[in-house]
Image (cartoon, rainbow, N blue to C red):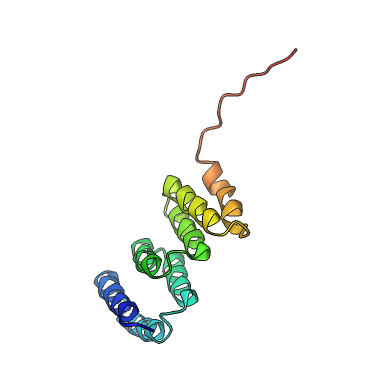
Length: 133
């Protein structure tokens, strides 16, 4: 654990406190994340909980801080794409999924998530011509 990670956790929770009505929960989450800030799974879990509570801006803040610390984590970028998809930011979600797929070509989740109905149904189908011969 290094000072940069601890500073990032502190800055993140200052930002989250401005938008939260649950200071007790945030205090517990902050101490847990500080104890494990070098492990991407804890960042992912916090972002997931916030996303599931529809606290999209808070979840986004977690991802922004985590991506500076774990910039090569395909799982992080994939899950960021899920947040963006749920938030309705479909173009950005596709970019995040593409980035995740580039980071780890053996990781299939970003490609699966790109094909989810909530993304593909938002784009109009291209006009297909019937080429009967």
